[in-house]
Image 1 (cartoon, rainbow, N blue to C red):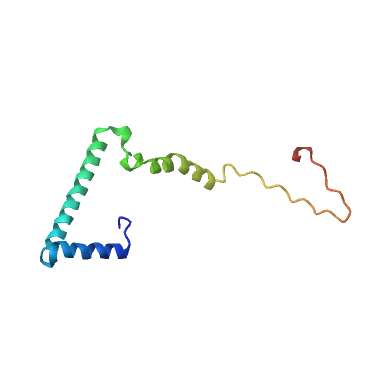
Image 2: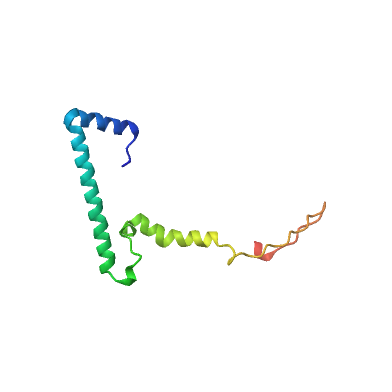
Length: 114
C-alpha cells in the first residue's frame, strides 16, 4: 500500500489517533475514504471522456501508457519477448551431431570458423 510497510502504517495510525483523538478518528477516516472515492471517480470520468472524444483510432488508448516505463515496455520489450518466445518462425535447423574423433585423429579444418 503506497510503498509502506506494516511498521510505517502502524506509526501513521498512532499519529492519526493522537492528532484526531479517538472520538473524531472514525469521522476523519470516513471523510478520507469519501474523498478518495470521489477522486477515483473523477479520474475514471476524465479517462472515459478522453477516450470518447479522441475518436476510434484511439480506442485502445490508456493514459498509463504515457508513463515512460510503460511506454518502453509496451513498444520495445513486448516485441523482443514475442520474438524470443516465438521460435517456430525463426528456428534454425539443428545440425547433425559430429562423430567423435578417434585417438590420434586430427579434427577437420574450417576456414569460416577462424
